[in-house]
Image (cartoon, rainbow, N blue to C red):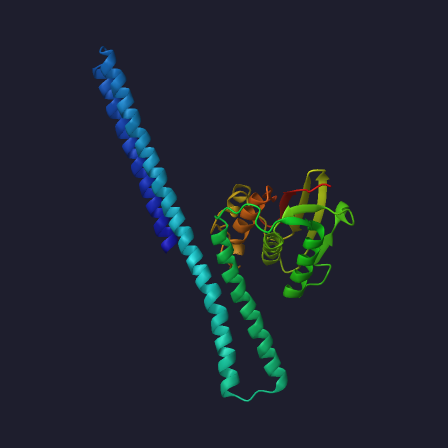
Length: 302
């Protein structure tokens, strides 16, 4: 209901702006026809009405942008509220059960395991929000050192396999040309682990039931190291490929709406890539045809 209301508001402002521009053009044209013999008045009239039309367009664009931004903020707040409330409720339920009932050792261990998983989920959400807040802060050379990017990616892949209980064939790692070649980058290991983990998490969450994810690290030239994560999941429409890296943005799709998230993961990846002098971009042939996310970083040579 709220989304349809905001779309109606946007349509109202766009229609109002179109009407005002039409009126301004009509009045301006009439003024020019009435004073076409007086050059100075005609010139000043054209400038005046041009400024009015430009102001109407700029003001309408600003209003529409703010409405969309507020919609994204509300979606983010709803998502974060859900991501915080769900694990807290689950942990509370397990603790109340342990307090009020006598459970056997096997069930107790299962409760502990589930509470730890919910704690990790809760911690992950908090870290995402904190990382997004730090993304706008410029840090020059903070904790940066040469590191083996291929090894870092391999470690992140192993962590993702354990976390999501995946078989090696579901999440495959191909070191490409970097195996043993020391493909080093100059960077903050914690930030780069966050970036790689976010890309992997995104691929896993938006994959189909039969996970088939390929992770490859390559060196296309002497100056760059590239990470490519390819999944066979829900895919992304062409017009959304650049928007997915914006803060709070989530692709409006029936399949994607079923996946909970904050809309901050890829925004953090882009921020970290830029801080390290690199870039990140996505490629997809369309909905239902999978996605490839590429993270490119400058290579440190001897």
